[in-house]
Length: 134
Image (cartoon, rainbow, N blue to C red; front, side, top):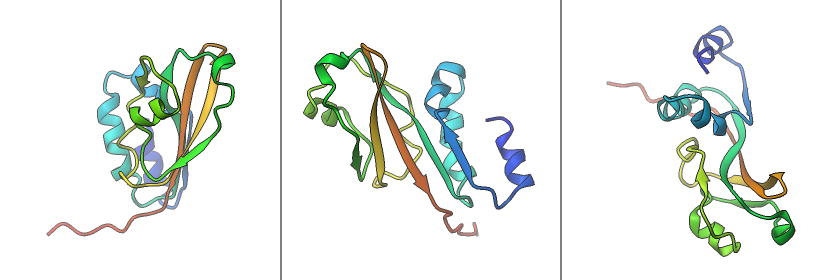
């Protein structure tokens, strides 16, 4: 993440793909909130995409193996988890501000252990026009 601004300067037409990185920043960096808040602006002239941990909880694969991927025109919420029958305590990986509020996202259930479910969020972004500051 510390190299990204320099790399973008070196390759101004680069497309960027984050592969299961952004949802781990909260575990790895104390400044994760600031880093994640800067990303959309830093990448606004680039095509970019990410798939990352969104939520994690202790959920039994045996009880919920019927869960399937889903798409939403917004970020998954606690209400969505409850509608799926997934109660309990969920860890939010802090990636909620990466994409605009009403942006299409895909969500995939992923059991990293038989009793540990991660919801993976995936989305793509196209370059945004930049309005000059006056």
